Image 1 (cartoon, rainbow, N blue to C red):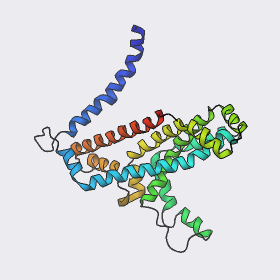
Image 2: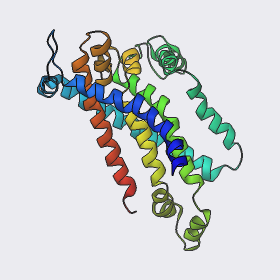
Image 3: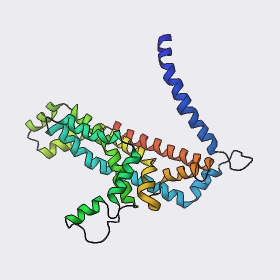
Image 4: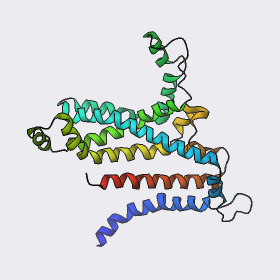
Length: 273
């Protein structure tokens, strides 16, 4: 018992020191009023829920994260399926190609997309060379579309890897049994492969949806004034306006949204197929 205690205590102490205590400090400040004589109050939370701007921005953040997650599933699942069930060699090379973006900073990737999507940029020149667009500018940069494109690029590797792991460990004999019962490819996929890969889809959705809720770098660089989300508001409160108490309240509300999202997705994962 003593050995187990001493083995577990260091990580537990680190978790408490660098996660639990800062979280409680943030919650405490979220209930403090501004001014020279701060006191406990609910005004920060009331301001958030009484102003339609913040509620609309919250819904915009959630809807953007949902769109990014759905696109990542639509792109990541076929890629993971091909890697796990179709090709027999070259999987390691493909996995390395998927993981390579993790080796660069999100800030660098955001600025790379800015150069690619701006008017007169690389994408516009390629499209114009193949006569896919006219003389009008592309008009993607500093829109919500640019933010979604960048977030999909950043987070879709999480989806691919989790789904691939789920498909890779699937017992191939079950698929062969389905085929031996004269089930077609679509029926086999819909009744066997897709339900068994559900844990990978749910795990990938959590790894994509939750970080997308808190992003602020990509919306700031690629979305401009149209890319404002909850993350950019929190950043402004802490580093521009110095409204730390209100910023802490918004951060705690975002944390609650994250926890609720994880609970909902985890419930789907536990449901019987």
